[in-house]
Image (cartoon, rainbow, N blue to C red; front, side):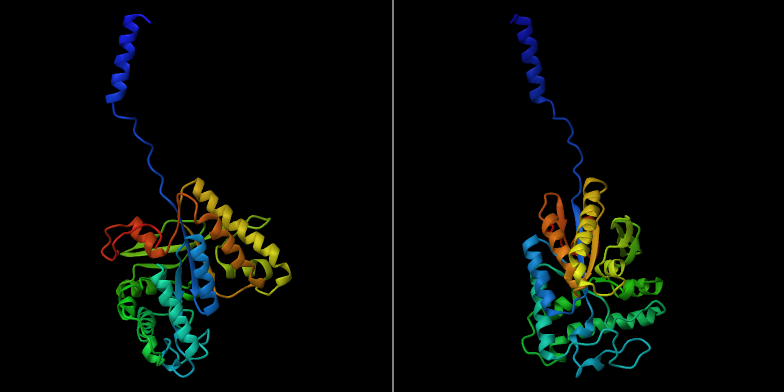
Length: 334
């Protein structure tokens, strides 16, 4: 090689060695998946959901109805707005042993990094409630949750339960998703960080109402006619069988739900990466079809690289660091 060419090559190598590398492409955010459970009643489903979380390396949000921490003997500790004491649209726990088992599940889930949030108490439609009505309902939840062990004469209240009850219930979802300005005012007055009662056309980042983050369950494309449905098990139940049990078709319903969840996830993962929210109950509808679909979905996506199946609270802490109400941000997954 001619000497001049060798010099040019050496100079190019030197320039390459000292020049800064090209700017890396902007790092994409994780694909967040927010899975939640409304009511959080059945103890067996508590255990099943926690087992799923362990297999999928996921964390869930449980929107608890506080009447499931009351028995027929203690039910009058709750009074819904405009109703006599001891009334509930969803009943109460059958006995003290059932409450004790549920409290144990709640405390265990909390220790595993899951989030406990409020679904109110008696599952009444608060669409016509005033701010004062909502404030009373939120206060009833706080009081009953904090005092559930002593109220039911259950021995073994964990150290730290009351500080947990006082400081870590930051989210709310309205029964029937029936939310309005009066609810949002009450939530802000009570210091909540977010509401998850909205509905949106598709996956969407939460909006802000003052200091309150407002999440919306998405309508996702589902079924052979590609119609949209709220990403919640009950809405799929109504879509598939008009709310009537048809366990003989459970396999087909499971496949449809799983395919809808997975397609919605993949569209966001490959696209804008807006958080995908999926809402569930502890009720096994259509022979458990939707729970099996959820289990398959979570086990398929939650361990993928660039995916974080987290609680609502963890998501907020990750995307809104520095909020006055934020806990110290840690590794994604709590």
